[in-house]
Image (cartoon, rainbow, N blue to C red; front, side, top):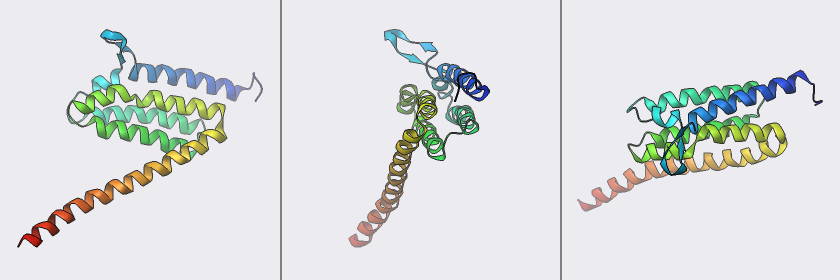
Length: 159
């Protein structure tokens, strides 16, 4: 695209705005020792609904990426980042620490910026991530089903 293309200007303006949002959500609050957290980690401290509220706010970035034309595999990868942060973040205390460190919004912004620079390479690497994530989820479901079945079989064999 040429430098004065209105679409490119719109895209760079959106990226600037999304970069600001991701910074507020993931890095805006300095802590002792040079560490930084954002509002997402603070909101996540609210028991029960904090992580869900953070996921809804993160969905805005994903929707913006969709409207900017990000590929389905990039959007799935971004969604996976938010789901990982949301579900692990729901674990009391340890999840809150993970939530503060994982920074899914910053990760998602990096994915979107990479997609803007190299759509083909970004699409390819995101497909591999989505495939690996899907296989991991299938394995997790299999383990969740297999463990109770094995426990029941062991109890039945005792009698």
